[in-house]
Length: 385
Image 1 (cartoon, helix red, strand yellow):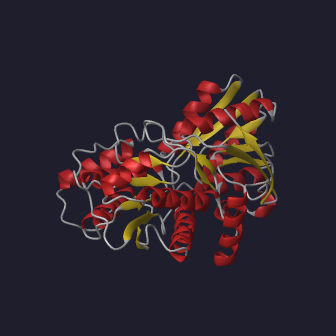
Image 2 (tube, rainbow, N blue to C red; image 1 turned 120 degrees about the vertical axis):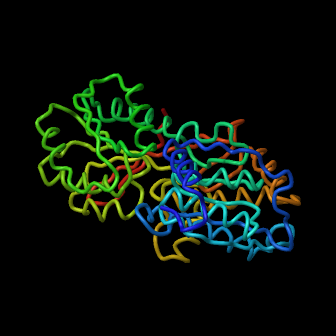
């Protein structure tokens, strides 16, 4: 999963193991970090190709829009933002390599990305050693920031999503019996599933799992079809979730299907097909279908004008992440001071709502539950755990 570099097999195995666990020992960090010179250098470490490229591409676009706007407005303290954009190929080991490249060769002052929890866990150690802050727009795994001085998360955690889904299926869908079908190879999906199981007071009549890159879900769906249930809870990424929706609907399973923010993106609909993507509900941190703030409206207009498409929650979160870094860069002489300023962020008004980092560098945001029929989001309502 990693670019070919001169790592020993022991080092490679250690990185792979830690990334799989979602925990990375930071070790010691540089006391001075990287100096801020004539420009403020931000590294992008996004999944621009590979299995979850939909997330990374959206985040790259949102982040770049923020940079363009800041630079057009005169920059930060008169300094323009210089972007070093790297593709981690949706691979955790590659994300670690990209992080090393950004902090050692490019000497960036901050990193935005990766999008996913596993890649973020793999990338943060090398950023920390260099004294460079890393902010992930969308890594949601619980405990990811524990003991991580240089890691910041700009969205809600997996446990938050599991509780929201539990509350939603109970109160809005009146689901007394559910099927839980989740990606057992994903820390993200497992985190949501565990939180759901601990929160849900109804009956889980069947618990099924799948693996990343699976394509045939007929066997599990056949077991599910004959069960008595009110909804399917489906934590996972769009790559598999879309296919599951397609195959479930093709087999005549028409019950509501509820997922986390991994359903976000046009690729989910492409996998499910529009005609089968109905009675679908999923969590999002941003909505283009409900009343939004003036700042969010301006972002929507600018994003549509630049890319001729609708922004996803991932684009919006990355846009906010860059602006948080930009605010923190004011007056900072190096990346360590920039990190300290990010940690002090309170009530930052972004397009995804207000952001304040707690002592563990996590944030809790307003969430929306999106309703999709015929491949189109028709409604969104604010939801809480």
